[in-house]
Length: 414
Ligand SMILES: *Cc1c(COP(=O)(O)O)cnc(C)c1O
Image (tube, rainbow, N blue to C red; front, top):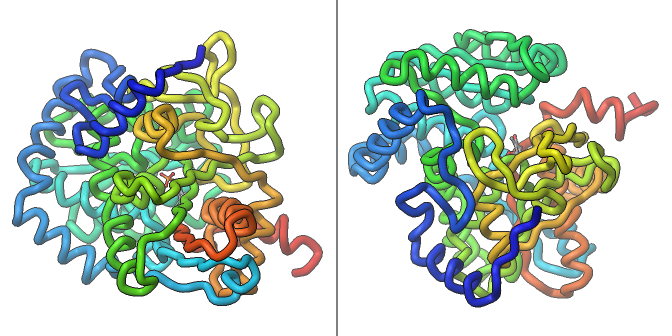
């Protein structure tokens, strides 16, 4: 069940990606993406696609978005040099600080952009799904800001595990609906949110949390997150005096990574590395390394790589970081892997936690555990490529992870 593409076709597909031809008119990145949804969803997706076509590049929408990003989200986020890590690792380490964005991670970039779009499309309410609760919090914040009522679907199991985020959402006026069907986690929550949307596709907007799902969501989320990479390019030229030799980001559904990577894809001299959760190890159900060990298939509306068994049953996943714990991945990443432009690797729970601790002590930055996976991978790269210039996407801050850190790194120390 693997999918191989010969070198000539891969080169041709990559050239088309660099020319901006993907997603194509069928919503595909080469073989990946598309729309694998019930017939009832097609009109809603068509409406959304037309709305994006009409508004995304509209000067007034762009001006509204720029104003919210600058004055409410806190953009541009800084590019920070890491003097201590650079000295220790023998390379130049630069960090793009999405942890300093409002609500503590990159997710707000997409949430505010989609909420502004929802208003333009005449939606009266918003629905969203959330797993660990970070996208729910970003959605609640963006919708409160714009006066849009929002209902966030969240698995009953997750509601229990992520109580502080449930409280945050409620304080910002969101309705949090527990999902008791299916696995009672993120996948079931997405299904419920879709069901809600289909019942009123013109009055409701579905605010999706990563670069996943049916076309046009992977495109929309990429466009809204690409500000991370665009700012980084300009800041690297100004502060580091040139483009990075290598760029690293962690990959869950893939939104912070595609946002950082996309503006560098045409720079063939820039190595690009996506880092997934290796969890407890390579065994079935022990990790969430979809790009590293997944096979092609359909999950939640798109053809991509996913963690499934030989019968197409989705596998259980594990990661110490809730935000990377997902059996699928955005179709553009599956494409970039297949054409060989981006390399994907995995980092285990313990290595990620060690990197989190090293970053915190060396630079005074407590990152999200998701983010720490990228630092661990960058460290190995730095050791193998002395004096190289490395850019790491610092996707979010670690305050939300204190309960997990109390059970792991701080065990016996509190
Ligand atoms: C949600 C989250 C991720 C993973 O989501 P992507 O869509 O892959 O970016 C990574 N880092 C942080 C801090 C997150 O909150």
